[in-house]
Image (cartoon, rainbow, N blue to C red; front, side, top):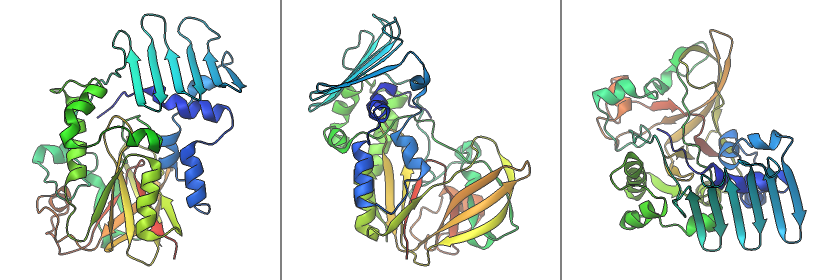
Length: 361
């Protein structure tokens, strides 16, 4: 599934990076978690690749009125960004086919072509979420889902074990919005028509179904022993995780080559830490970055180092659930592993863009 969403919204972070200043979300992270390095999964959502900053024709000007960035030195097709007291303005593309973005006190407005004030989504197709434990998988979804191979039994997590794995990463390029902006946008089922209108999404489209599905899953009650929360900004993710685990925590994520199935063998297993409490945050499909986070006291996290047959290495994060009694009996994990709910610990590796929060002690 892919949201080709508003690369221009990400220009806010790019502009500030270009001026060697920190994003508000980064400042918040550093103030709350001064001793916790930011994992790659978070950095990727904050900083999309600023490829156009490598262009020698890019100029940045800083003045009392704000920050201005121009690419292409005013040529047709160039990009212009202004950051000032009134918010953020972005203009990209040739006249008549350009995109305009404004981020101000009133929220976010985007225009593409003649559709003023509206972003455009393409090639979005909603799919199953294997990390929602109330979900039941169909036979077709088992064959089509790249996460099938990521489920395993805890007894198999040992040095020398060989596994055939394909690590995945969401194709959704949407980034985190600042908390002030994210909080100004509705996020509830009863506001769905307003949300779809804000983002110019056809109510009968795959994009609309993806948005509806994410909101619905966020509103559902968690399973027994689980406390869940959907973070619509990095600040809210930090707040939820530290409220459950305290501020002496670390956030970890998988670092592996994605897309191709490989034969790996485990060379090191590091349980992180001895406590069973953890908060796991899964990336969702949405117009901007949203993470479904859930905390349980029957979860154990591991860092696992593996080497593939071709010599490539993977530093994977694995999560093992010691109590699965409340899971849907038809969940993907049970069908793959041929076990029943509540009988044995069920583990899975996390995709690159998911995050595990664990206490240091």
